Image (cartoon, rainbow over all chains, first blue to last red; front, top):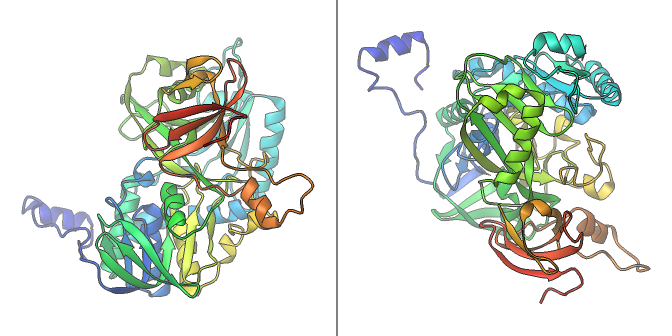
Length: 418
Length: 89
C-alpha cells in the first residue's frame, strides 16, 4: 500500500495526481470467509481492521448494502468524549480516547482529531451538584474533568447568553478538556484503506437477504451477490439491527428512531469548544470550514426514514437560540437525518448471541461515532476469542434479563422517550 | 410534519401529539404466573418493524385521549387510527 506523506504528495504532484493507488479494492465475494462483518460503517470497518491487526485474522469480508461510510458515520456531529459516570461506560470510552489520539498515525490517514474540549452547561444548583458528582467519578477513572462556575464559563464561551432575564440562566458547567471532534468520513476511509491493505474484502452494494443457521450454529449469509459461508458473523448495522434480527428470529431490546443534525452557513471562528445545553437536548460545535454543527433530540417515534420532520428541528434550534442568541442570525445550510439503534437503557450491546458464531454490536443510541475505535477493538476481540473483553463485559445482551442495566442517565427504561 | 386524524377530534398537526410506542405489546395478565422472558418481552424487547406499525399516541394538547395509529415507519404514511379501546383487526 502506498504510504501517504509529504513526499508521496510531492511525488504525485508531478504527475498531476493521476497515479494515486485506489484506497481500497472492489473485490467479488469469495465463497467462504473466516469472519463476515455485516455493515460497512465506522464500527464494521474498525472491527475488520482490528481483527486483522490485533488478531491476525485476515480472511475477512465486510458486506455493505450501500456504500461504506454512507450511514451514521457520515451523518453524525463528530463529537468525541468520555464524560461518563458509570465505570463500564467510562473505562470503555476512555480506552477509545487513547485510540483516537493515536488514530491518524496508526491509520496513516489524517482524521483531524481535534481535542478542543466539551462543556456541558448547568442551569441550576442541583445540576451543578450532579455535574460535580459525575466529574468526581470521571477523575476516579482517570478521565480529565473540570467543574466551571458561571464566570469561568463566561470567559470560555462569551457568546452564550449570560444576561439576567433568561429562562435557563447558566450556573456553570462540566468540562472535559481532552474531548473534541474528528473528521468523520476520514475515520471510515482510514479504517477501510488499512483493512483492505491487510487482505480484508470490502464488498459494497451487497444486501443481506437471510442467514443460514443449523444446529444452533451460524453457517453463512445469503446476499444479493450470492451465498457466502462463514465460520463467524458479526452484525454492525446500527439502525438496521431490528431488520436483520427479524431474519434471525430474534427480538432485541432496541427500537429504531430518527435523529437529525444540521449545519449553518460557514462563519468566521467563534466557538472553539463543543457545548451542550443542560436544560434540554442540544449540542453545538464549529467545523473547520466554519459551519456551526448542531443536533439534539430524536424525532420521537419509530422511523427508518433517514430524513427528519420540521417540528423536532424547530424545537432543537429553539434551545440553541436560547443558549446562544447569535445563532438566530445564521442561515441554515443543510439538515439531514440518520436512523439510530436506541437501546432500552441508553447503553450499547457488544456480545455473543444464543447462536454460535453470531456476534452482536448495536444499541449505540446518540453515541456511536465517538465509540468507533473502542467498539471495533472490543468487537474484534469478542469475535476472535469467542469471549467478551473486560471492557465490553458490561455491554451484555442479557443484562436486560438479569437487571444489570447500564442506565447512565438514571431515568430507567426507554431513557430517550420524551 | 405528520397530520394525524384523532378519532375524537379529527385531523390535527403532529405538534399536538406525543408518542407512546408499539401498540401490539400486551402487559402480562394480572394474577398470572409470569416468566422472566415474558417480562422482558413486555418491558424491553421490540420488533421495531420497518413498514406498517401499530403504535400508541396521546393527543396531549387536544382531547388528551390515548389513540392507536397504523403508520409506515419508512414513509410516515398513516393508514388507520383507532380509539384506545378498539381492537386492531
